Structure formats: C-alpha cells, structure tokens
Image (cartoon, rainbow over all chains, first blue to last red; front, side, top):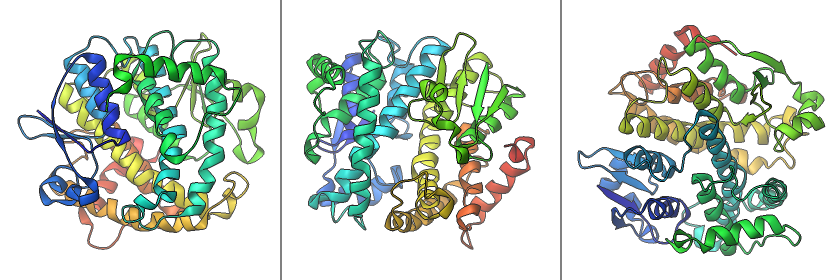
Amino acid sequence: MKLYVSGRTPNPRRVSVFLAEKGLHIERVDLDIMKEEHKDAGFVAMNPWQRVPVLVLDDGTAICESIAICRYVEALHPMPPLFGTTPTSQALIEMWNRRLELNLLAQIAAIFRHSHPAMAHLEVPQVPAWAQANRPKVDESLAILDRELANREFIAGDTYSVADITGLIALDFMKPVKLTIPDGLDHIRRWHETLRARPSGSVW
Amino acid sequence: MKLYVSGRTPNPRRVSVFLAEKGLHIERVDLDIMKEEHKDAGFVAMNPWQRVPVLVLDDGTAICESIAICRYVEALHPMPPLFGTTPTSQALIEMWNRRLELNLLAQIAAIFRHSHPAMAHLEVPQVPAWAQANRPKVDESLAILDRELANREFIAGDTYSVADITGLIALDFMKPVKLTIPDGLDHIRRWHETLRARPSGSVW
C-alpha cells in the first residue's frame, strides 16, 4: 500500500492525522505540486482529477478522496472508532464532518486558492470576488461552531472523531490566509487547543 | 421520524431517490424557501446553517446533510446495500459519491446560485465571475466521467449505489442552468438514461 501526498497540504494531512490517531504508518510518496508532478501520466491514470491524497492498494486499486481513504482504514482497523459505532453516532459524525468540510474548510480553501499569489498558476482563473465572498461565511460558521462547542468537548459529542480532524485542518488552514478566530469565541479556541495538544495534532 | 425538504431542490431529492430505492417512506415537511421558512427559529434550532434536508428522529435528534441521512437509513435498512458491503467497495462508493458531489454537482450548483435571478436574494453576494469559472469545470468532469463509464454500467462498479444517485441529481440539475451533455459523450448519456429509467429516477 502506498499513500500519495504532497507536502504541507490540507487534505493529505487529514489522512496523516487519522493514521496517527490509529497508530498506523503507510509508506508515502510525496508529489511536488509546484513542479506539476500531479500532472504526470502515471498519477493522472490513478486520479484523473489530479489531486492528492491517493491510496494505492497492493492490487493497484486507487482510492482517492481523503475521507474515502480514512473510511477504508477504519474498516481494516476499527479501533479506536473515528466514524462512530451506532447508526445515530455514525450519522452525526458524518453530518459534522460534512459541515466542517463544506461550511468551513471549503470556504477557507476558496479564500486561499482565489487570493494567494502562489495559487495563480494552479487555480485558473483566480476569482478575487469569490475569495472575498467567502470571508463572512467563515465568520458565520465559526460563530455557529462556538455555540455548539459550549456544551461538549468534541464537535460530534463526547469522543474524538474524524469530524474533529476536519475541524483541526480547517482551523490550522486559517493561518496561511491570515484569518484568526474572532475574539469572544472561547469555546472554539479551547477546542482548537485540545485538538492541537494531541500527539496527532502536529502531524503533517 | 420526519424529513424536512423543500420543493424540487437537489439535496432533498438525493434522500428521496435513496428512500425510493430502499422502498421506504418517511413523513415529509415541505418548507417554502422563497418564503424564507428555513429561517424560522424552530428550523434554525435544528440546522443553524438553515439548509434542507433534515431528518428529525422521534427523540428530537436532528440529522442534517443528505448523505448523513442516507447513511442512517442504510444502517437501519441495509438491503439493498447502496454504500457497499466490503472495505474496498465502501471506499470506492464513497470516493465516487464525493467526486460527483464535489467535482460536478457543486459546480452546477455554483452556476445556478451565482447566475440565476431567482437566487439573488438567497445567495448574497452573487458572484457572476464564479458562475462563469465553473462552466469549464463541469465539462472537464463530464469528459472524465464519460471515459470511466465506458467500461462499466454504474459509476462505482457493476451495481447501483448512492454515487449514482448523486450523479442523477447532478445531471438533472444541468437543465435549470441550461447546460447539456456535450455531443460525443455517449457513455454518460447512456448512464443518465439508465438512472432515469429506474422507478426512483423520476422521484422528487
């Protein structure tokens, strides 16, 4: 099994943190996106959308999408469970993982991709107005998350889950786009510190 | 159990088609988004992001996000399996569902939300340049999907899955934004016709 990643990018990091929480190691292949190694024919054959991470199994099957890879790892190594263990907890973890991805991480990524000079040759065309439109959406989501976190330690309940991993990656990704958690959102700040303090919290 | 939906909108439809494939019926509450019923305090308490669908369980637990709802239904009613039955098939169905959602449905939705006059008071601000930037991405994804579908009946393999449902919803959502499947993409056209011909294919 080989895991294709690329430097310090957010989606491969979701898998890295997940593996650290499971105490697992998978051999890695590190692509240099700035050198466009993700456009090499061999990689495009594995993922026509030219994105990392990709997990290639020993029989050649390529599993793309960070959450699909995490789910595969969970099926082979169920402990500790990070996707829930009952129909309700599985649904709520899926819900929170998607909320954090679609209502926070995606907006931060949009700001990065559509405003950062380093992305100009990868995101064509950059749409600065789209970066700008996403800024208030980040603040809205942070405010909602802060209220939710007032009553529980982790975002989907009392135990750590894959949704917390997506939250960690999103909050850490605020730094390169120079966003900060607004004053007064103490619950989200506490949550972020809890996630970062875990052994998995500084993994890339 | 009650399912909150809203008229002929794509994400609630994913759940409706999923339920039809399972042969299940859940009582529905139909919100009028044009009348901003999704902003009523009772609904916002269930989903602070103010979106449908939401499945409310008898104990009051609110499950938001169409795929989280589908996964909950699958756990209670495993047959026929629509999320896969082995670690590999589960991962590949998750992968394809995410690709169809993140690389096709999301782009079509962006075009709709950022160019359709009816969305002007719901999507603030509309960013026409963002709608425009998504048009070539739709064509790129359709071309990739067509090549993939040359060798198999359904998108994640030989059996119908939740990923096909997301594909059906995405392809049908092209009509209101006046997009069509480009000439020559016969495999994707055949796939679309297969999905529409099922009893679930015309459900809303």
